[in-house]
Length: 368
Image: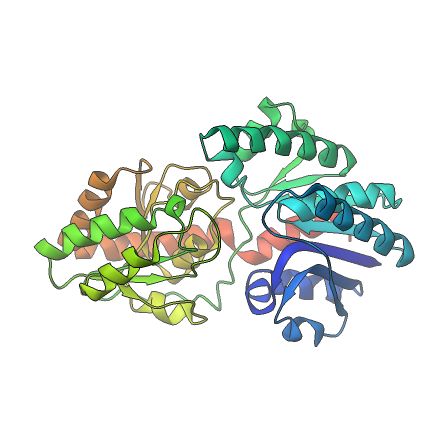
């Protein structure tokens, strides 16, 4: 069976770290995989038997109709000429144009995945509202072409159903992308308070809120450390580079850049913090922190709140820096409870977010 996996922008090592188990599970069933997208360092993927990698003319940001038409035509031509049997997609443009293209190419089994609704469903500006209307129309067309649609949190399902973009019976709820419990093995947190945030460095990911809280906490608890990892890209929502440099120069935040040793850094931390109000699926960084056994501070935003079960951390309101400071202070003053929360995080990861359970549901739904 020929399976096409579409992704908007494919960073080989990152994609493999999140989807590698799924790729191997599919190959083990004697299917072949073609991965398409705007490619970056995909040698590790193309070297795997059963996987081919094909560049697609996709731009991750922007809504240029000519570029999007070019992408749609690419999908149609490729799927027709290569007799694709199943299409499985991630990211907005791959989901929309991959699903529509698959139907026009005669593919019968089409399964997009919504990894969160993103900027269009977060912003309140006139531009954001306009983009949301356009995205809803495009998603509605794409979902009509789809067999089933995977979602990563119930809030996204409810919103899409309420907006009449999709019928509920077409929705399949996943526990995020799952986490490899062996790779992200449990270890006890450090005695000293070390708060860690790993994310794209966007305002809506709560990075500036992390800065404000860190500056306040550091004055009262000089021994506390604040680790930050992630990339600054060309997104208009990116944090100001000067703000990052300033807080690092003050010795408040330790910026690690883009790292590939997340398990090791998590092992040096005691609490994982993600004060995001971006429309997440379920952030993979939270799943990694759960698996390693870290207490969590995050928000009640869609996706993020799925990582806290009432025993393993705290949920605060988005943009509430006072609450973030209060919960950080509590974590510092209650180190024994932080350890207990970490144990609960690992249990929660095992019960709900094991990548093997997530992949089993994906494969059973796609009937491959």
